[in-house]
Length: 429
Image (cartoon, rainbow, N blue to C red; front, side, top):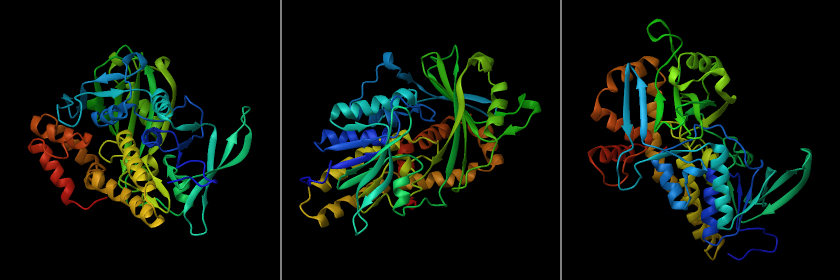
């Protein structure tokens, strides 16, 4: 499509996280003019577990990312799961689709690496620019955004307008653009909460991502079981990302004192990690995790939602990076096809393929995840599962693939085909 004189780009992307950077990279690679507006200045932090499953690694490989360990990329072999009196190791499986390893990289470096990669592909990044509202035609169609810059001294700067025939909201859980055009979050979708910090630790090069399914207030035999689950992801740079999370089956997040729970967990963490106050690096920070496409529709009148803005976090494990990267790729493909149409009708019809593609990709899987959340909300159910399930290899192979979305969506072994069939026959999220 030829740009009108008043249009600054083919596509405006709001937010330079993994979703926005993925979309920008692919759009630029396809020859589209794309502007990315980011409210912060890189490097900037984001509350996250910093763990990358093989699904996320696959997306990074498709983007052509250089994951050199010298640049802070830590490769891992799989999951170490602790709970119910058991400690088991679940290696990432060999498969046709995914590599047999995961990665870990602090979001302070990951997000900057991704957006710099998109810029190298041809995208334009404008930092220190907060989008305040969409620009809409009289019909309601989004055709750009208004944004306010920030001066070097931190004061509010000027308001600028950026126009394009298509806008992507990759602005995170707040999804301000989506909300401003009436796309509200759904109350019947799960909402998670995660808190995390960093510790210096001698086990910073541990090859396993650790998941603790039981958090005890004191010594195991004489104390209460705390709500939630914990993780320890070694980063290979002298530190580990340590956090805990919980999830509610509805949009109303659990009302827990996470700081108190975290401190209690750290008092009883294995001494070999050395998670002491003097080894803590940075504050304990929290973030909401919008799950299972909790904001719909994912496309309306020139505006597409990707990543957290569209609720693309897995209810099974709280992971969002894989789905953010994949959504950026799929959105770019759909937009590229739409912009090649010769009529507004054709363009609109092509853009409506995006929510259908995302529903086909993860809709059934996210529906299974919603059922999973309703079960684990009950502590007694989780307790029984960890006590009697972790020492059953065949069952854990199934659970590992299901919870990590590490199954072959087409083909694979009996376990893969069973999960794929379940994801197909249930209603799409």
